[in-house]
Image 1 (cartoon, one colour):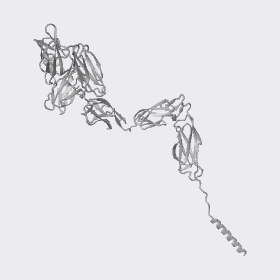
Image 2 (tube, rainbow, N blue to C red; image 1 turned 45 degrees about the vertical axis):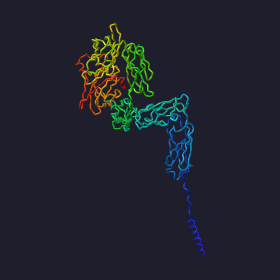
Image 3 (cartoon, rainbow, N blue to C red; image 1 turned 180 degrees about the vertical axis):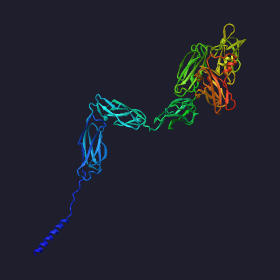
Image 4 (tube, rainbow, N blue to C red; image 1 turned 90 degrees about the vertical axis):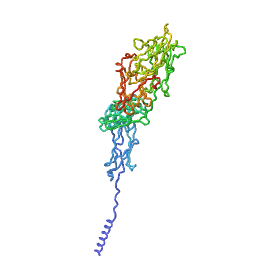
Length: 625
């Protein structure tokens, strides 16, 4: 019995122990990140801190022992509204702010775990102010000049009132396409060139400092080409200066040449198509745009397109063409006006009398017209008008000055005569007896061998006539019946000529208003004088291109002497001729065939056939000039 009780006791104890072993265990909840602390808890940015000086702050995660404290948790930082995110490592994340990112007085820095805004912390950072800002301000930049390769960056430090602080200044670049600058003073070389970076004190921009930045090659710049100025519309005959800018690697960014897609319409100065700075001349009016290219040595190019408008030649009208110094009923003044001026076009006037004194009594300009008054000596007055907006629009006209009108019943036969170079002397019958004569206002003297008079016949020598330019000339003859001068009569002489004639001297008297005229059997395309291409503004083509007029204002710019002329025709032929620029008193000796032969105009035809150049002369007032 006693043994039975021991067994039962033992079994009960064993059951209780088994029950205890079967009771389930309750595990403790693991620790996770629930805290964030910014270290340091506050900070002060000194006034003398450099703008780029770093100030670091650390976000410390907690509590210590948190199971996820080493996870790469993201931390969002905020300073004065600007956010930045970085990743925690080993339970902390650190950020560094530049001094110039803080404003004066108080700043708030906040750090929070991304996705858990309640796990955060904030601190206050104080930035000391620049002393005496706005009162007697001073500023300097460091560096004051520097050199950067294209693509390279640097930093400019502003010192205001002795304190390094870029936040109180505004930075500006003189050329941001060359060097750019940020609000903090970071500069970057963008393209080759030079730019000035200027820093202005924000509340006192009258105080500023500058830094010169040279952007130099890094050896990899792209070549760029530009044309300046960009022509859009040119007038026929107009010439402008042009320049090609080339930037990039100095080894390849070098100007090479110009190219025009229409050499008939325009041209770049002869011999200067490889010059970076040259002139562009409009040759002929076009219906479609002309393209001008500029090339660099590496093949890089650019182009501009422009049109050429027909430039109507300027025309002058004189009313009347002959004026008189003192004769009842005859005009003493002549008004010369522009017949085809553009709206709003203004002109300059140049008035040149045939003698310095006496021919011209006076003149008055009225914008598009000028009035000339006859003086007491006979001669002529050349009046030239030039457009102020387009110097190629110019023209000259001649007004003849006579002291008196015909009187006394004097007669001359013929009253109108035509003389062609190569012909014999020109004869006039004069009655009553000849006393003296003037040709274009110049007194003829026997000593000059310019004329003879015998038995009622006045003979003008071939030597005199050969000096005359093509066109109209006025012969004035005084007569006498034995009691002094008692008669006056005029004759008109028209000079024409053929370039193939032995006396075809084709002389132009420099300073005169007469043009030179030629006629070809083939249409003329281009004119070359002494192997130089002549701008079409200096001549006129008529009769479907077969008539050539060399303008007097162009001829008057040439020096004295002989000139060769080559005409290129539309069918490709070359025709050669020559002419002379002479003084007013140029007079070959009468009958001197050898001398005149030396001055004859040669006419040749290259390629095939023989084509005659037939110059004829008219008074300049009959020609569009």
